[in-house]
Image 1 (cartoon, helix red, strand yellow):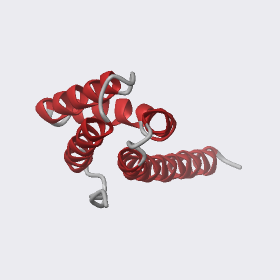
Image 2 (cartoon, rainbow, N blue to C red):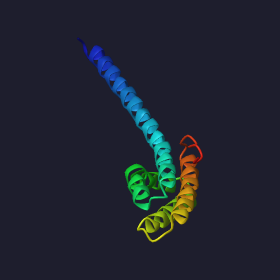
Image 3 (tube, rainbow, N blue to C red):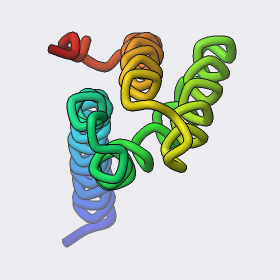
Image 4 (cartoon, rainbow, N blue to C red):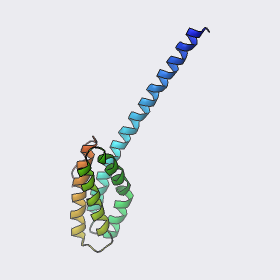
Length: 133
């Protein structure tokens, strides 16, 4: 193979690798955006479990806590006020999960956290999660 043929082959390989990398990144973005919806659903699940604070705590930390941190981090790049509200609401819920709050207080705080979660998800371009029901 001559120099021109090798250069063409290298160029094709480089361009192909770039496309593969782009496709892989697009898949990660879709999974991240889907996790935002899962996080919002986890907050709703915790609100539904709020009659039993221990159960609500387990659901919150299992299904929503980590995702809320990730969402707030990404939202801070787009809208710091929305990210700040999400973090404040998350901290309020965490404080109530120590068992000192009534189930009704906890439910209301979790529903408010869900609203903040939806606002942050919209800010980062995630699909709009459904309302808690």
